[in-house]
Length: 89
Image 1 (cartoon, one colour):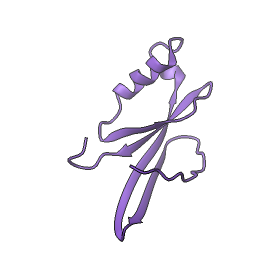
Image 2 (spheres, helix red, strand yellow; image 1 turned 90 degrees about the vertical axis):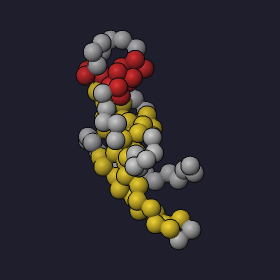
Image 3 (cartoon, one colour; image 1 turned 60 degrees about the vertical axis):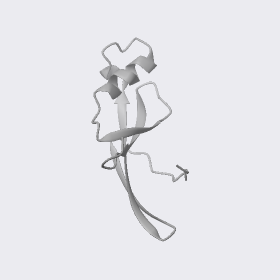
Image 4 (tube, helix red, strand yellow; image 1 turned 90 degrees about the horizontal axis):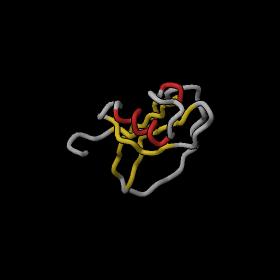
């Protein structure tokens, strides 16, 4: 998949993003969401952060595929998901 960067204003929590694009005269709808995962919500908040992210993603809605893990802060990590299309995993 080719990537185009589109700046999205930073929100204070979950953001749902719907984009309609036309590629070669064919319209497509893309659905994304950005969620903030807080380190304090980890089962072991003092453990390795990669393990924490893995733990949090293991319980996420399978309707959404991981798209991008953003730059972490001291309090949270923003994670972007893309909605899975039917028949695609």
